[in-house]
Length: 316
Image (tube, rainbow, N blue to C red):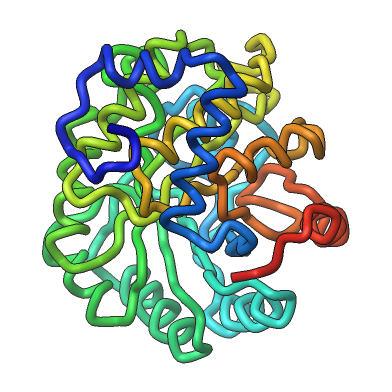
């Protein structure tokens, strides 16, 4: 039953949930959300690009890929003091989790990784939850991040196993799952979700959710991203996704992974206030907070504060 903690979901079960009459789906997701969470609380997270551009991966959605001419300027790893300054500003603005992203295919041992460990330790000492996304990770690297004070590691699956080869060819689905295993076994919370609106089918969205829900344990955080069509990437001309499909994805994630934080992530600039309100009703309880997500735009801070206030939601 929806609301049970399970790791054995079948494709037909997930598709049946996802395809329920829209208002019934929202109602059921709301009930489960209220059962497991304080429905009036929303976590605010801030995401900072600590190393931008020049990524060797060919992810078709990503403006930081070196395979595409997107105008993103390649930058080296940020100095520690600037990262900690950004974390303090984020905390002062109300963020409780600080996330750092580096455009790497995988983590390389050496001075740069040592600096990332210092960043993790420094942000943790500021009293914030700390999340990083650095690409593929070995078991030893996951352990070192845990020792430095890392709260969560983000490593998205992006889409279904079947649709994945149409989006990325430089890293396999199995490699992504291996990194998630290393993270979980190190005692770090897993932050893992995907992107919708990349031309995938409804069945692909359901199958992504099935894979996530069958991870054991469930991801602590499930980011649901809406494609931001970056000029110069292969997906720049992709057709708009029906906003109701985005809400359905959020609601189904809530039903399948009741304890997880379901986070509205990239793409909120193209969602109306009303669509975002439906997502909160359907179980979303976290957002990225700040004017930019890595290299893509995000709603302005004042706009988000006004939206949350209008809905009577507070920061958790």
